[in-house]
Image (tube, rainbow, N blue to C red; front, top):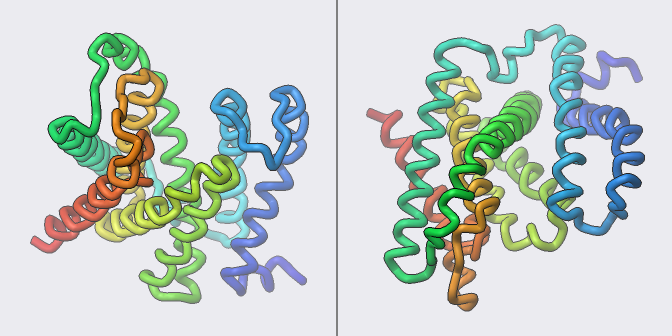
Length: 270
């Protein structure tokens, strides 16, 4: 089958992308897994996961550029082009995400379902800068893949809504690779997160800026709090509401996503 024939089908293009990405990563991942003593399908620890993710995501832009070149399209077709609009949308999305987290955690604290350890505030401040860099990198890479490349390809065969649903399912399910069974409770929330981020790209005129900002803001806030270990959930019986450190596994996290999506839609409609 020729390259031209592969690109005639969005499904074959997507399969080829993930296949090439995996094949390029395996020569790096196998020795790295040996050094880290990670044995799949065992769920990697945080210390094991970070180097593996870094090595995987470092390759992704090169693969994306290669596929854009083969399809004779500019890299900006994925919704990522360095300009003031992109930067402004990233800042706006980050602000919306951080504000939402403040409201979420503030409400849980007011209800007595969450406790802040004020003695850990210096640890939180120390975590902010490194987690910001990681959050931006992860968010840019994942948005390029799932709301950029994947959504573009699926729209060749499906409507935007169906393409968003399918890409969000893939986005959610692939989290099982890293987090195993621990991610099962978050699958509905991850799917909804993908839908909100797809909506953000559509509302931003095809640019990934708003989606990257939202994604980065949420990852930054949650990762910083987790790293500082500043939060405590005193009632395990309320995990279905609070998520106990995993907002997407709780009702309140789902409500945050729904509210964010509704707010963006309302603003865009004005």
